[in-house]
Each structure stands twice: as structure tokens, then as C-alpha cells.
Image (cartoon, rainbow, N blue to C red; front, side, top):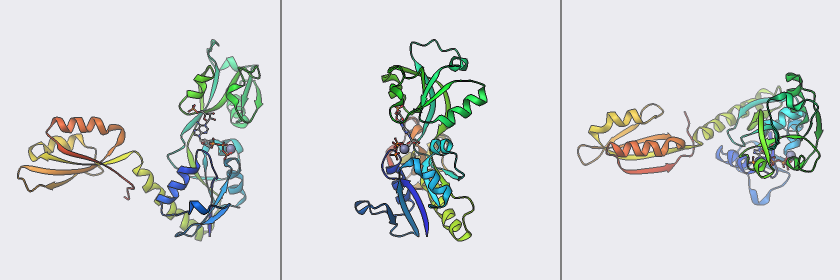
Length: 283
Ligand code: PRT
Ligand code: ZN
């Protein structure tokens, strides 16, 4: 039986459970225990703090784990990164008080930097030849400069709101991170088959992220023009309508381009435009 470690609670928990659910691995939330067997797939889910997931997988106490790449990079345990999962995106950055005149990495020589990611920061500074004093703190790193505990911080940034509200400015983005699927090195063939199956399901789910299904009616004379506007997987599906001279067009579009595409299609005569949620794309 394959065992997957995921975060018990926190930023990655909900999306990890959701990804597993969409991949057909059902977990009964209401009866959640430390270790749970999935209802309809040969896996067990182990709920842990994210800090403990890389080590648990490296030791083989779990075969797979879903965790932020930042944790894998910081802890340094030997695990295979099997797949990037497309959620939990963030970066670990150096930030300084906004009153500081920052003109490059040399600023950090001899400075005190507060962080929960000392190993990632040390590697970065070693590579760049910077000698700074790294203070490891857990908890609210962003208050360290105002409290007089540090000259700068090295912390996770996502929207940047936390930095702004603490009077800090992001000056160097050091590591980009997202949730990753990690695995114990050298899984046996039997487990590897289940892992491959799971990864292919994850890929299908991910392909649907940020995508919408678009259905619309169009004068047939505008079809060539519409095909140029629509970035379909191969080409859009075209179905004739009962009313002659009209067709129905169906395709998948990226959510980011949705409104732009809709406006361009309306301009060439599209009507009855439906935007539908898309769950998975299996290629
Ligand atoms: O309890 P447990 O130890 O399991 O959880 P945790 O409290 O250590 O971690 P958690 O749940 O906060 O985060 C889990 C993972 O989510 C991290 O390891 C990252 O991979 C990822 N992630 C994505 C983030 C963020 N975005 C994020 N914004 N983790 C933390 N933050 C924090 C950051 O520390 C800072 O305080 O949010 C703040 C900055 O956010 P912005 O949006 O204001 O820039
Ligand atoms: Zn943690």
C-alpha cells in the first residue's frame, strides 16, 4: 500500500486534499485521523506538519509527499522531486526596511538577516560571496527589523502585502517555490506503477487549472476568423445549428485570456456565449 504524506492543516492542506480527490483518491474529511486509508484507491494518507514531510519521505516512512519546494530545499533530505503541482506558488526573498538605500547584494555584507530558511540563504550568500550574520527565527520573521533584531529579512513572499504592512521592500528574489510531489528514492516496481498512475491523473487535473470551456454560436461566414482567435488544443469543435448559416463552436481557453477572447468573438458576431467550468483534461 502506497503512503502519501500531506499537510495536516495550513496553506497546502486544502489544495492537496482537493488534488487527491480530483485524481480519484477520496478521503473522508469528517472522520480524519493521523493516518487514513483512501476509499477507492490503494493509498494511505498520512497527515503531518509540512516541516516533517521531507524527512518522513526520505526515511521511507511515507512513499510520497506533497510539500512546498521551499521546505525540500531548506531541509536537504534526499528525496526525488517527481512533479510540480501548480499550486502554493511563492518565493523566498530578501527584504530590507524601505528607508534603506539598497544598491546591490553588497549591502548584506556584515548585516544581520532574520529567516526561517537559514540553509537556503547560506547557500545563496556563499555562492555570491556575501558574508552576513544569519539569525534563524521561527514565527513572525517580518517584525524582526522593526524590533531591532535584524537589518533585513529572508522570508516567503506571495502577494507582498505582509512586507508592505511591515515597512519592508523586496530587493532580491532568491528561490521560487510551489507545491511538489516528492518520492522516496528507489521505490519498488509495484509501488512505482501506482505512482505513475497517480502522476498521470495529477497531470490531467493540473491541465484543467485556470482553463474554461467556451460554447458559442457564430455565423458560419465568421468561422475562419474565429479559428484564428481561438487557441484550441487541436482546433475548436464546430457543430452546425438547425438555423442555416450558423454554427456552434466549443473550445477550451485559458482563463487569463477569456475576456479578451470573448470581446474579439463578439466583434465578429458571436452570440449565446457560455463559459463553463472545466474539471480535467485527459490527453
Ligand atoms: O503547521 P505547518 O508547519 O504544517 O505549516 P506552516 O505554518 O509551517 O506553513 P504554512 O501552512 O503557512 O505554509 C505551507 C507552505 O505554503 C509553505 O511552505 C509554502 O510552500 C507555501 N506558501 C505559499 C506560503 C505562502 N504562499 C505564504 N504567503 N507559506 C507562507 N506564506 C506566508 C509568509 O511566511 C508570510 O508571512 O505568508 C506571508 C506572506 O504572504 P504575502 O501574501 O503577504 O506576501
Ligand atoms: Zn511548517
